[in-house]
Image (cartoon, rainbow, N blue to C red; front, top):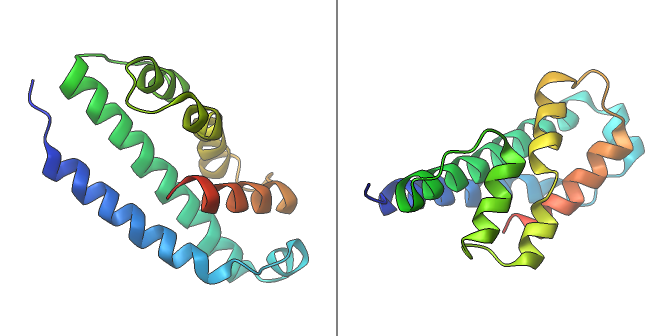
Amino acid sequence: MVLKRESISARLKELDTVIHELRRYEAISAAELQADLSQRWVIERGLIAAATLILDVADHILVEAYAVHTATYEESLSELRDHEVINDSLYQDLRGLGGFRNILVHLYQEIDTRQLLEGYQKGLQTFP
């Protein structure tokens, strides 16, 4: 299998674009996020896009470079760590990303504004 660097590069470039857009809302408070549905949607959609891009890159690397197929997002992240693609510190920071993404996608009507804000702030630190 051949690792397609241009495919990974394109996804990482898109991730940079998403992060840049998300940074526009860095100063938002939980109360503002609760009150402004449009801003909340931008942040939710940006986090979904960022998480999906990261997890897609993870799977692409695992399949193409190591012939590893995983069943879950969390397994993908641990396999990246085990293959020393990412270090343990980054793994610890990314742990739970798949579950958070799934909450945003499938349980968006139930997510607490503070939980969203915490995920957003963590993402701004971790994703770059």
